Length: 163
Image (cartoon, rainbow, N blue to C red; front, side, top):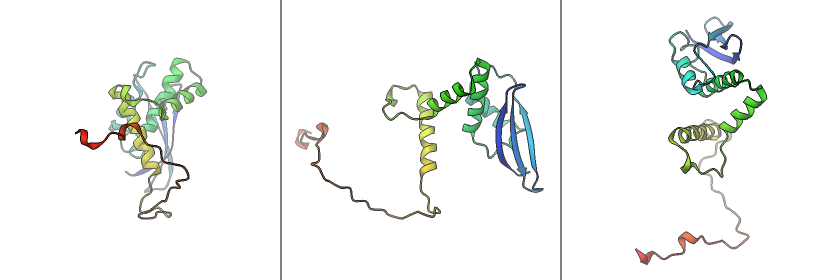
């Protein structure tokens, strides 16, 4: 059975993921309610999203729903269980999913570093120009203006004869 996901959302009481999809064979829109069981305010959202996506009962329906979107929905549910408002949870998600260019990634643990890298990969994929894009140009050359004197860096001032 092939279906195209149209909308995905969350219901807080009782907790469930709701998917509105279109059956490609019949062309009808349908709604699937997937109950969320054994999820507490201490649960890991990424693990819960992965388990739901790999569940044999829901696997074919969630095939085209990204794991990141499911993680966000579980984060909303966890925020609700902690007693946070939707605005607070959205602000927390925004902080977690944006990359601070001034942040030192060398000081992060492996799990946080992998999360930051996946966010960067997703952003790269979204902004990447592919051959099929209408405004794709092959081999672009750009001249940068040099109005001011180039500054030398301290690390490249030493000569190569020291080696």
